[in-house]
Amino acid sequence: MSAYSISLISVIGINVMLAISLNLISGLCGQISLGHAAFYGTGAYAAALVMVSTGNLALSLLAGAAAACVVGIIVGFASLRVRTDFLAVTTIGVNFLFTGFVRKQGWLGGEMGISRIPPSGLGASGNMVMIAVFALAAIAFGLYVNASWMGFVFRAVGEDENAASTLGIGAPAYKLTAFGLGTAMAGLAGALYVHFTQFITPDAFEFHVSVMILAMVVIGGMGSTWGVACAAIILTVLPEAIRFVNDYRLAVFGALLVLVMRLAPGGLATSVKHLLARGAKS
Amino acid sequence: MYYVDLLVIGLTFGSMYAVMAVGLTLVYGLLRILHIAHAAVFALGAYITVIVANATGSIALGLLAAIMITPFFGVAIYRLLYQPLLSYRPDVPMIASIGLLVLMQDGFRIVFGEQGVAFRNNPYAIQTFDLHGVTINTVQIAMMVAAALIFFGLHAFTTWTRIGVGWRATVSNAKIAASFGVDAIKVRYTNFIIGSALAAVAGGLVALLDNFVDPRTGVIVSYKGLAIIVLGGLGSVRGTLIAALVLGIVESFGTIFIGSWLNRDAIAFLALIILLMVRPQGFTGARAA
Image (cartoon, each protein chain N blue to C red):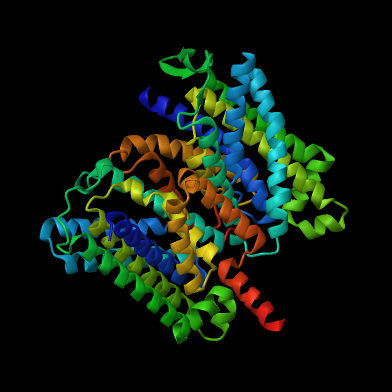
């Protein structure tokens, strides 16, 4: 396998994990988060610090997931205080706060980031396999949650929190769970990113990365694990396949967001479902 | 005198934030949409000012052109993007709005380049005055005067004109206003026209202060604008003015006291998050969440 396809598959795997993790929070549980890159970054920085000091692969992955999960639950408390678009504003703030903080910290490398992170010891293709396995596990986990009782409650809270509370569902606990699970997965993706690049800077976790992750979830169809995974793959491959898209990546993402919201707010998943239903009828 | 300098810087930034955020808060008051693409209107105003000023040699003409052209763009956003999405959850138009902003920003980069456009002849940004040890330039004075005039004008408009009163009535309760014969659609168009023209004024003045516009113009302002309108208590013009000035001052003092620990934008958002958690209803008490 060429180095190019190895790195492409690794990036796809990481993006699939990010999209599915945000889908748990925003798609299923309805808590719009626009600061997902901050959790991704928290995981990456924690994993990088652990790698630099111990060089232990498993420990770094664990640290990435745990650190992001802790920060995620703290931010999750914000979702108990403010709802919908205000939660979105708060999480945008969290993202700017994260990058603004990291850029000024000497011990996190400041603007220069952390370089010379020890290799994972698996080699490039070994890393790719590891990332792919985690990405597949993330898809399986997403499908499992979706089909479980917890997923059912997440959807109930997402659709109408007051109605869910009336039925005796402890919405706050479920919202925090969604944040905890989703951000832990994003942190794990961040840790895998560290092993993939061995070099991180604050630029990789800027707000536009959060917009990109949200674009994957929205274009795929909020709440649909398959739709979101497909959108993550398509939106990662598209800029590689078409040069024009690569040069104007953000413009294309923005245009897609506008078009999907305007024409099919349910995303790809809902549109495909409608097409299939129409096909079955005729 | 050092602290007075900081205060002046804070007030100039704050007054521009205020002029920009009025459009945002009124859109929220009317439609319950977080109009993030307002920053694209702001950036468009800045680009038009620079380009027309360079072409004609007159900065005043540049500002005038920006004020004349951007309202069409603002109204188009409402008509083509928001109006069809009004029946959805508030995050649907908000995400569409973010998409539009990202698209426009990258569009500006593609059309005008990474470096942006600079004024060919802008004497005002370097023309400074010394007021008892406090240094201030013409653009900063213009910013504060413009903000004062605009807020006085808005106050007069919403107090003494028929359409202004209708506007206020619609913001506070659209249904009752409509039953008293206020044309809600006309109010919305008025709102986008005025809000966009004000964003253009702010964009043009910020471009004058920086002496250039580049693709980053408006990026940060957009999200800070959200912070301001939330702090101000949504839909409240007075609250927006207070929140914008407070944020400008907090930022300029914050960069001195905790600048080694957080950057300017992070300070603004830290203030936002703390206030949002402590007082979700904003400074003036209008319901937010």
